[in-house]
Length: 257
Ligand code: CAA
Image (cartoon, rainbow, N blue to C red):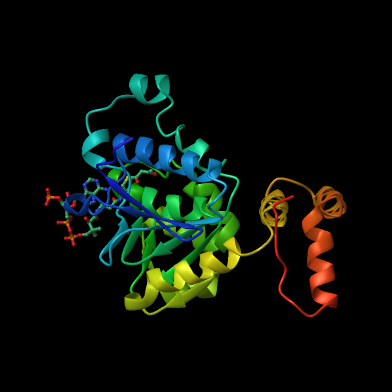
């Protein structure tokens, strides 16, 4: 598929996806969604790839869902077509995806960043759910993922007032993993992604799956789920290799088996 609104590049075992609608501050329209889903499905299938980075420009990661695309829609078309349901497929990507966020991550942009496995923020990043100013609400999971990430008080304030938070506040609130200087954001994200892509592939999938389970289960169920996956990893050749390599004081050489 030839893409018009995203750029996709493989650097070693890392796939870099750059949102590329600068004229609309990377507003997320149907075309970006279908291109992103196609790119993520290809990434997930490609055994040479271990981790992905999604980024935008220095000015905007994404300034929201495309308001101009939604402006004339009514209830019947939005509900009838389950508008935004397509984004659920993005969250089913099994390999890790890092959001490298510089500039605005607003509305759907903030929601896309939160659908990724973690966020690295540039020092100029701004996060917000300003949909209320358009007389609507988050629609791509923001009210749920933001609340789980930063807690009720801040999520409620952000959704009800549309106030943006800067990178420092986002880091204090636990929304982002780390802040890096804007000029080095993508390189730092690629370095982090390469570290992940250098781990044993089945262990990477298992670690992602068990951390995500923490959102969906009770503590007892989650701990049991973790333990079962932990046990399962002892059925892999890479576990033997990893522990043998440690004892022999050498790096592991993974087969993905
Ligand atoms: N949809 C469509 N176009 C957008 C857009 C969006 N979300 N955000 C920005 N643009 C467009 C602008 O219309 C403008 O295009 P034109 O030059 O053709 O007028 C261009 O991008 C540049 O934007 P601005 O001139 O507004 O740039 P600025 O620097 O003055 O302001 C901004 C930047 C504060 C981010 C401002 O653009 C803004 O407030 N954008 C909208 C933010 C927003 O409300 N996002 C939520 C959208 S709804 C949503 O996301 C629903 C959901 O839950 C998924």
